[in-house]
Length: 288
Ligand code: SF4
Ligand code: SF4
Image (cartoon, rainbow, N blue to C red):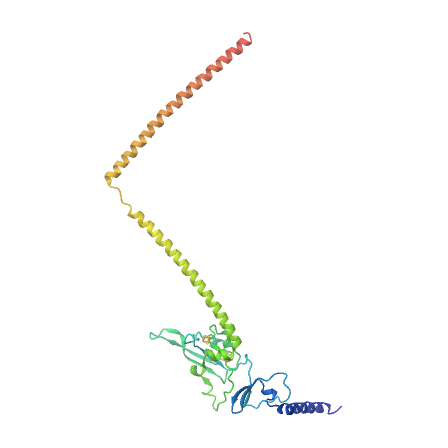
């Protein structure tokens, strides 16, 4: 029927109005339960998805509690534990940024040699499209997405071009904004550090074993080298002694050879005699 949809819509609006009226009669309306009071009628509301009644948030006094994965403009992390910027000026984020809104200048030491830190880091927030590619590709967890979306200014340039100072936040700020992700990263980092420590220990143990083997070999070598050399007279005497030993052995060996040959000849004679004896016996047996 013509106008049914309109009547249904008005019915929904009326229901919400009545729910809100009902809710407002309570000392703390449902929509403010669990919200964070900031003073001066300002509060952050954790609006449940199944909330009945008023769904409008009175921005800017009231703001919704943002989900952890909300992202707006990147921020750089200052590691408060190590007291240093996590960024190493590798430039990967600048390379992968689709609209190319990151600009990095690598720092150098007093000799002009490039070092692993930035001297300048800019992001043009007017161009950034909050894609989070820079965060995904950063190998050092040095860049994360900020939740701060109130960035209105009168002039885009240079006010929306953020420098390193404006972009840098302490690690604790990131931990409060992204608690789940922060915990996961900390667990992963701990595991990696543990693995690295084990590898280094194994490496050190192997190096120590190699060094011990090397020093043992060196000690053997020096012991051999330390053996006193024989004098020429001693060597001559030793040679004479060995020659005498050889002669004696040769003499012994000769006499024993002669004895063996004599014994063999005697045995052959004996066998020959026995064979003749047997032949004569056979002739006698045959009556010849
Ligand atoms: S933020 Fe990450 S990816 Fe970008 S330069 Fe620094 S370390 Fe490299
Ligand atoms: S969020 Fe996307 S567009 Fe913005 S700086 Fe990072 S890579 Fe570039």
